[in-house]
Image (tube, rainbow, N blue to C red; front, side, top):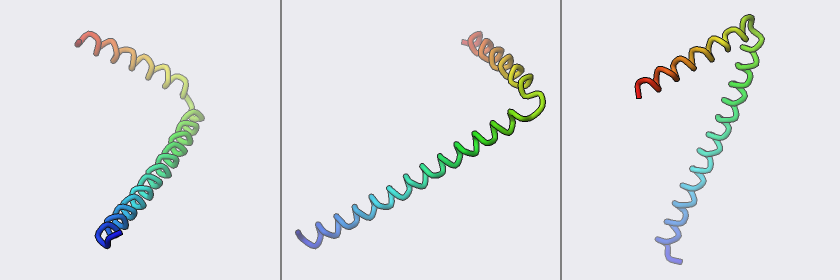
Amino acid sequence: MTKQKQSRIDLLEKKIEALVRVVQQILDENAYLKDLSVGTLETIKLMPNYKEAIKALKVKMENESKDKKLEI
């Protein structure tokens, strides 16, 4: 194998290793955000008037959905 081919292979290997590290970091951050989201949701569920707020949000979403259908 020539020196030029070997240096190209080394460069590609380094790039692949860097990409693997980036993808791993993204996966770790995604898992962290999932845990944070679940924790936040569970905390909100413990707040007073949670069920009423969910009902109000459902009504609001239905109204917005109807408005968008009328625009089309």
